[in-house]
Image (tube, rainbow, N blue to C red):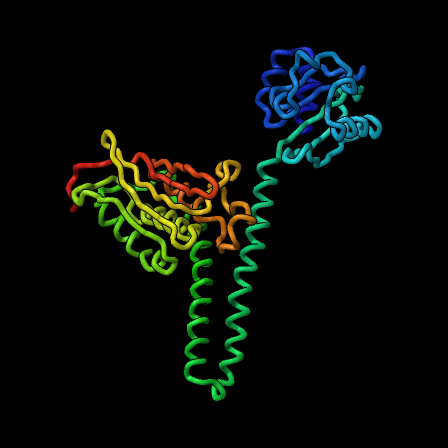
Length: 360
């Protein structure tokens, strides 16, 4: 890309309209510096990245402008070395850039200036960090049950010395650990299958009460084990909605599972249905630990988990809400969140179309 920028500048230096059009459409930020060390061009992306305006920097010596010191150093370096340089830098706490600098020469080889190209890799860097954290968590989650199972297998090899009660207890623990492993594997497979899903799923009329009841009843035991007040509002059994049933139930399952998981014993989890102008909203509310406003912006990111100091070492992989949000998008639904720390959270599946079509 740097080569193409150098060519564009050198060949179009006498045609500002053409040059500006090309630089405007480029994916990176571009700054041009002449031999008098003055900035003679800056494209909109560079303006945004550096919070600068062309009118403020035009024809000014680059060292007199409040550019980040790392970028100033990279410009000085390319001027000294007279060949292309490339650096990865971080500005502040959360702006990650690749900075490429190169001399600009005419076809004759005459030096006419320097170009700085900025690539914003912040999102890519954050995703890589989340992936690393994810694989660290997954490795831990896999190692823990495997170590447990391995230990009990060794214990069972001397089963003659164990009582029937001990054997039964060991088998139950091994079964529990195996279920944990299967849960992780299923999440990974779900993510892999999600990547193959079409952008829009085929939707069919579904009986809302039957579908919600299927999921709701499957978590009754989980709620009872934590002494959670678990309830559901009345849903008219005649209501049919336009959904992909299996994917809708996956979303609802993730929301209810999270609500129970992050609600302390004696808390509440409630599933509620509302209608408005031919559309419905299905919400899952809890009295759990809540989600900070900062984390609410990130909860649908793949691999993201909320502040570990507040999740009380609750197991998870940071995939459920990402999966749910993606599936809602493919069904033309909206997944909304309202939450307050130490008060609770409400996730709402919105824009559910109500249909009169009788079920087959």
